[in-house]
Length: 169
Image (tube, rainbow, N blue to C red; front, top):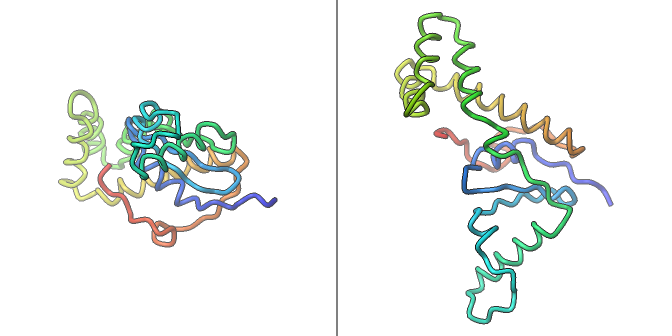
């Protein structure tokens, strides 16, 4: 059996939507990406024979069992492994202008750091720079994860992966 070549951008896109309530998996045998809401992982019944369960829930239970019971599925990097705050800090430190760099470094500490940062990148007109920087950081994490798990991948773009670009995370 041949091992699939997965889309690097599809893995990045999946990582981009992961949050504290979602966990994403890659089937290393088929290349299928699956995201489960953590409530689905922990709260759905394990029994498949519930006659009163709606069809969508039965399908969800089957997929959950497939993902959790199979060694074919690998969990993608979590938000804790991605650590977006550290990516923001690297971006701030990379800014050439010392005044702007210091302004941004001060904004990412304390309450509301993410919102203050987002507001500041738009006010300063460097939002696209941030999104490119963030995309490259996610790409580096995804490549490291794929390489560590010996999964072949192809380089592609958001457009060719069939996924819309995510902008406000």
